[in-house]
Image 1 (cartoon, rainbow, N blue to C red):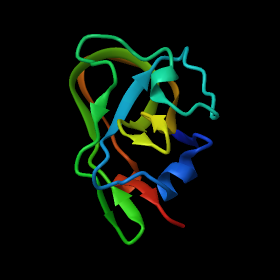
Image 2 (cartoon, rainbow, N blue to C red):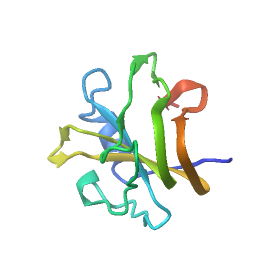
Image 3 (cartoon, rainbow, N blue to C red):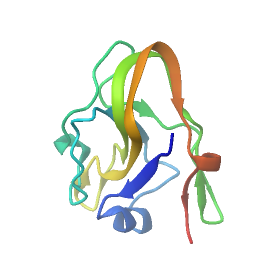
Image 4 (cartoon, one colour):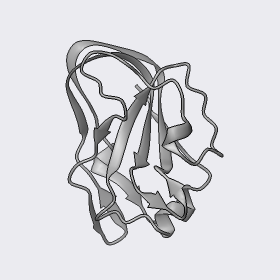
Length: 135
């Protein structure tokens, strides 16, 4: 499965501005194939077509063990113990208010096709556990 990543338009402003990788809570939420990506969107609260299903909580799961060193931000995979959903996208956002934006969205991961998960443990891993890297 090839996953593509898209930045929301304000991503760089958030990352280089008020986002504090050490203290802001990052979340990963799953969305159905009906989700329409609008890179101009700023807040998670305005997104529609989030997944629903057994073992999935609205708003998604927290990203754990976020660490920043030498321009690289790493994090553990995000795991669901047993989940039943059909998901096409995952959205990374923070539960903070940054530069006047509440719950700003950061990145969208497109799985390329819909994943049908039926009462199974499932996790989403970042490439080499790297969430963000200054280039």
